[in-house]
Amino acid sequence: MLVNARFGHTNLIARDWKRLSRFYQEVFGCVPVPPERHYAGADLERGTGIPGAELHGEHLRLPGFDDRGPTLEIYTYSKLRPSDPPAVNQPGFGHIAFVVDDVAAARKAVLAAGGSPVGEVVTLSPSRESRVMWCYMKDPEGNIVELQAWSKG
Image 1 (cartoon, rainbow, N blue to C red):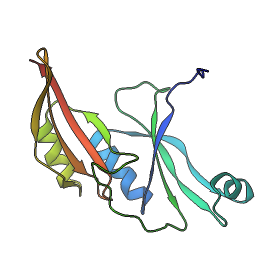
Image 2 (spheres, rainbow, N blue to C red; image 1 turned 60 degrees about the horizontal axis):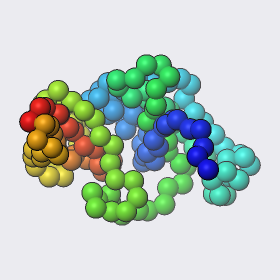
Image 3 (tube, one colour; image 1 turned 120 degrees about the vertical axis):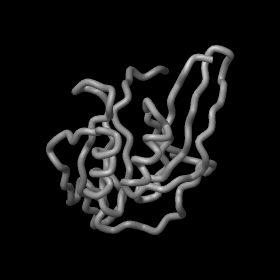
Image 4 (tube, rainbow, N blue to C red; image 1 turned 135 degrees about the vertical axis):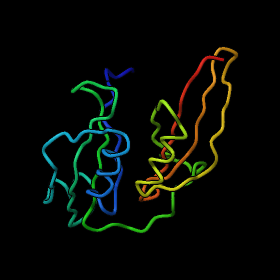
């Protein structure tokens, strides 16, 4: 059975939600959607399955959408469990992608804001009619971000 649905948000769990939120605002033009969120108590514990859970963060409107568009939700839990660093070929959430005018300039902006490279800037041709220049980067907390610019073949 098909469910009537629309995309709402993508969530990133951060070590420092304020710092990570600033990165996405300063580099990609994401805009905070008030209010900041601060959750604790029995409902959050039941919903997350985490005893004593506390959650703090905010939603950021993604660039290129109106006020009803999807958001990037950045939260920090009061107790974080250790995890392996993300990898581009790791099952699960892979990356978030931003379409940019200039991949090289966006790459420099990510680096200047505390990000790091994953690989090189490359160009692929998904069809004879189009090409995509792209690269993977990491945000300041190691989450993978793709920068891409499309052009005609």
